[in-house]
Structure formats: structure tokens, C-alpha cells
Length: 241
Image 1 (cartoon, rainbow, N blue to C red):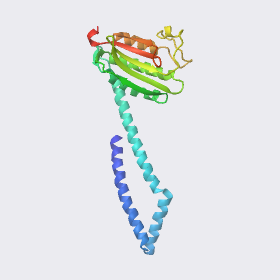
Image 2: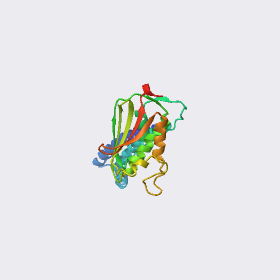
Image 3: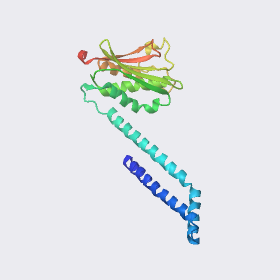
Image 4: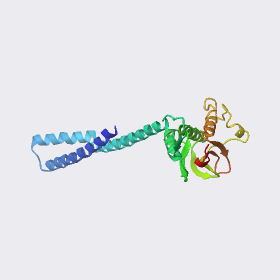
């Protein structure tokens, strides 16, 4: 599709160039009082041009091709991200770049986020980590979807990475409604949810917590920021067991 659209864009440019020459020729002939037969043909050309609004067609075709190319590129990127996201786990921890994993996951859940939040990224210097990458991507996905669902209309989600006290930290903050003090102790309980009936399984955070533990880290909820944050703490390679 990408290849055909880009070729079509080239053809369109060529067709416009020759169309402009025809327009110029038609105008010159019309100005020179052409013979009756030619005058009749020119009149039909002008009538057709006015009826179909050729200028508008050319403008629309340009926009449609550009938008289609942009859409095809978007699909290509999504398919690539899906392939990366669903890559089978080898069973052994592998050294991984968490920033790439976050970007890949963001692209997968972008439809869920784009209408609800502006996503900001503050990526720090963090080392590659030995981990089960697919599990961590699932953690990121659960936390991002949770953050989106906690925002009533529109807000912000902040993704921040940094190293502190021997841990690599992935911090996900949102400007959502948050939780009440009595809800907080139960957030990692299986099947516990603060969402309405049919809107949450109560398994997102427990699953994320379990995967964090399996990868040598932990998942905590911290307050005291601009807005509440879930923080995934992963041990640095030197401490990894």
C-alpha cells in the first residue's frame, strides 16, 4: 500500500503538470477566436471543468493521498510494535532496553490514551536490565490503561525513568481521580476493582504486581507528587538474582 500510494503521488504530480499545460493551451485557443468546431469543443471542456470542479478534485486528491500515506505508515508502525510486543519469551531473562519496551507498549495502547490524556515522557539514564521483557510490557500496558481509565475527561500521564537507591524506576503518574485511603490497601487484591460493573476485572494491578516480583522488582503506589504515581522498581543488573 505504501509503495502504491507513493507511486500514485508521483503520477498525480505528473498529471497536474500536463493538466496545467492543457489549461494554458485551452485559454490561448479561446482568446484567438477559434473556428466553430474547435470553439464547440472548448465550450464542452469548460462546461465539464465547471461541473466537476477540477481544481477542487486535484486539491482533494492531494489531501487524500497524503492522509492515506500517513495512515499506511501508522499501520506499519503498529504492526511492527505488535510483532515486538508479542515476541515469544525465551524462558530466560534477557538484557532489555526498557525505553524501547515503553515506546512499543505506548504505541499498542495509543488508541486508548490519545482521547483521554497528553502523554509526557521524562526518560533518564538507565541501564539495560535482565528481565522477561514480555511480562514487563504487560505491566506497562496495565498501568497505562489504568491511568487512562482513571481520568474522567482529559488529563495528563507522565512517564519517568530514573535510577535511585540501586533500583531502576519506571514511574507512571496520572491526573485521574485517584483512590480513597480505604481503597489503597486493597489495590493488589485479585478481583478488587474501583470501577463500575463490567468496566474492570480487578486483575490488572495484581497481574502487574506479580510480573514485577517475578522480574526481581516490586510495584508500589506513591503519593506526594503533582499527582499519584505507580512506580515499578527493578533491581540493577549488579544486584540481579
